[in-house]
Image 1 (cartoon, rainbow, N blue to C red):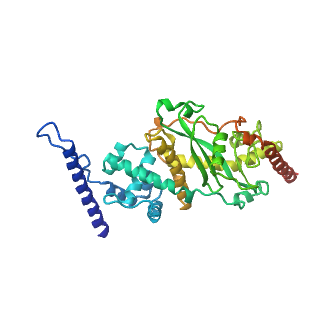
Image 2 (tube, helix red, strand yellow):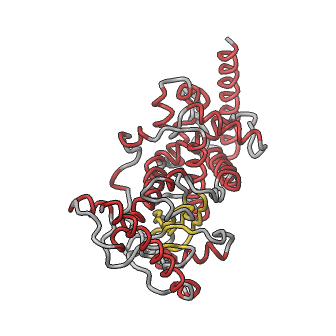
Image 3 (cartoon, rainbow, N blue to C red):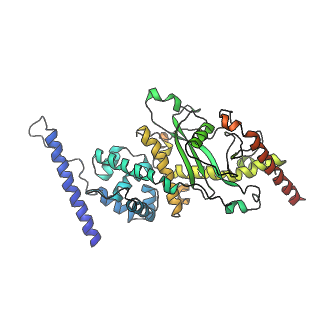
Length: 399
């Protein structure tokens, strides 16, 4: 009964506010036609507050479908925002509804008009709450996107990888996110597939969590240049540790790349069913098996938040912040043991025709970052040392 009474109070308050807004609009913009009756636009009996409660209290798949997470994680997110006093309930709109507006938007790339109809608020109210929640979630980045542990991860203790990769702390890649930019600003953001994107550098650990995100670079920028900029702005690699990278990066002691011109893609290895024939092939195979984590985490976050696959209608700054917010939310969901298996069978929430074709990682490093060039020889020595040990033990086990 308490819940029902609260819901009635919310609905009554909403209708009173709606009537006040309508009266204000009639006062400011009087009709030129006498006798013409003005009708309020947002009159649905299913208010935004009622809709949110219906989803949260309904079948478990509803919250995943509309808010991209389980209901208990939704509530945990709301409480975290409330706990840190980043956001709070307003007189009319609860914090739960504000968060729902944001999640619904990134789940479906919903326009302001669609959100008005769904949550029964004015366009200004929708825009304000979306922006507030976006800002609040990006503020959580310092809490939920943290450097990786320096202890060897359990994955690295498996015989294929131990002790050869004990100093590896994760993997790095660049991923392209579609953008909407005015025509006279587009050219730097045009990637090699001729679509307009931002190039976002992401680093992850072996628990499929982001440990660093560096968004906002133009789509024409190389992955190596974006990585260098991240290093100039706070990204650090502890001494003696390294991340795995692909061939689009220089091979250095901090960023270990595969051998060029040597088969290493997992799909290629599976297709030919051929064992590694030399140390380079074996190193590249193990490298690809470990680095597969970065591909998985990028795939998961783009499936969970389809807004990352389309060019949105938001301002440039908000588009950059959305990519960061989605990574924060991914880590929050991982921390609370959110399920990912349902994403494989999830029905897309956006029009497939709107999905933008974007490039994958750079195919080769082009020597465009001088700081990396100076350490490539040391990186080659480290890679050769690991490859030699791998091959030596591999041959001994087969003997």
